[in-house]
Image 1: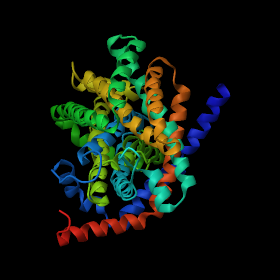
Image 2 (image 1 turned 180 degrees about the vertical axis):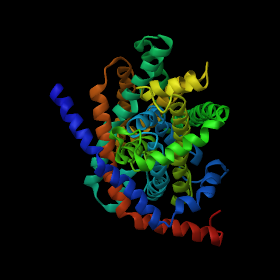
Image 3 (image 1 turned 90 degrees about the vertical axis):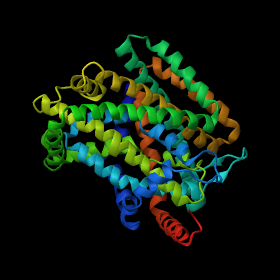
Image 4 (image 1 turned 180 degrees about the horizontal axis):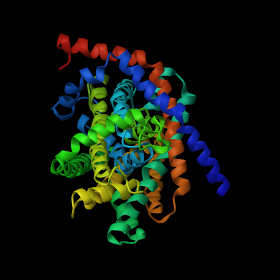
Length: 448
């Protein structure tokens, strides 16, 4: 077992090494220039698509519901623990590189949304199926690569999607409320089963309720801290921008550490390029691939530019108050401690309940991703068995030690990105063509 763990540590380090991070960010940079900075020019229209009312079109769920489903899997513990880890290992300057990753990642998410709708199909149940496996197969005509992506996605869902998340919730509840992990396991498994067994429509309804509440609640708590300590905002921002280019307070004092951990945690947080979110985008009711692409890219903005920024700025404010030190803490413990110090009485609870609901929503969103990957590999008849096994893994995660599972989850989650990024780069011409077509049809009045 020790040998297996050492092997997985080595493999995970290679998968998430500098080459992968350059490939992920580089894809976003390439698409940004190829689309002539589309994500910035079209951001107002993108948010209008999210919150506006639209005619009914082909699809299973609304554009808002598809975004909430994607965000349910995206806004997770990485927004709390991941940002804290980045700040400790990469210094406060890592927050800046998270922002940069997100800004370019919006172009990646846009491209994923476009291709998801462009190449989606109706399955034998009459539901929409799409995502990287479909645009790899139908766009690139590389069935073998599509199968590889689906395999990695199905395996990753049991780690990063279910057991790892439920384990995080169980430990948070045990530390805060003293409730045994197996008791939390029964509750969270039951609530997961109620939603997951109902399929995408049930998941999207739950996500549309949970995601806005949890995100608004967490952001509100952070904003209260920021407005109560306005004198620290400018110094905090100054440190973030200064340390981003000096590497101060980073591991080894190197600027490379700030970039590495900022980029890595940014990618973990918003999942741009990972290939997971387009699976949910394919289910949306929409009349044009580019319209859904616009909706998809707002997810990266919401996740990193808004939610992660709240965590990062509050942590750096706490860093200043502690005499430019994080006090030797990291992860959720650091975030809870800083929030509790700057918002006594409720700050720690804001983070604790944020972790619980962020992790639970991730369980729901990833169940759909894994289900679609499984059905692509084995057929629709394996969907129900997959759901049952996935639900069981939620309980197992609450009572098991998951060091090895974490490594498997990280590795397969990273491996998912490779086939997806290859497809995005090779199909970038299709993304550009669909974008131009969308603009032309809007100008002619053919599309609203």
